[in-house]
Image (cartoon, rainbow, N blue to C red):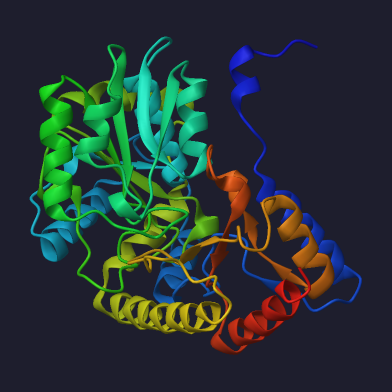
Length: 386
């Protein structure tokens, strides 16, 4: 069978192979510490669950408008006003099946065959794949400590080509957890818009910030396409709900796309998400953020003793991006051996980086402190044998 050639550019997500291996070992009776999958270990907050149950009990299961429940779009706009000082017209907010739905809409609207897209390397792999499925060529620009592990205006200037159409940023980023400052974002916007390009800002991990107050691109520009999600900060991964903030002129074609691609986001999930913005839920979420900050420090302290702590600690998300080159130049083998020998599951860097992924791994601090301390002991034992 000959598949569409664009599908051939979509690489497998190798972490899923590690997850299957880890689950198989658990089935055999091994005690596996899961630090591989980017999913909070907290249950969805009770107010959200109750709102979802109420929606189901009262028959709120029919289609919503393609752009989402008006009340939810207004609640999201209120969230931007209250926490970021941004005035966002609810009409510019489109609720989607997960942030992936938002990225799909944005990629289909903004790029076509022959266009080029700039994004950081390392990056979340699906971002590259969405653009490839739209027929675009991705220019993955290596970033490091010098650029704060982010794509900045200087790098964009250096790598912008004739057919470059779009720059995509992520703050906080996956897999490194690093953020962009307001000044850095402004410079990116100025640079890209002067070239006639577009900008997508991935804010999926917004709210999971540990050193500075969260920032949103919506407070800096009404031209940017901003993607967000209820999965990470709000703890609603399986509810499959996200949103896209689009410039006003782009809303109508995006709604047309949504009507044809997925019709609407899950209705019970949308009603449940209304509770995410209540003071009661906010208190729960902020307590969890503080817990994640504590976990980050436990890992940083423990890994520093092994020479594995990142040279620039992450400011957000719930990941550490570790250089393992002193121990291995094959992150896939490193991760498989760590799992088989010590029952610790982490993600190979080749999932995220076009260059340098073979000597990096990503660790998610989505486990309690006691388990993280145990993981450090096991990792120390493992690397002592390498």
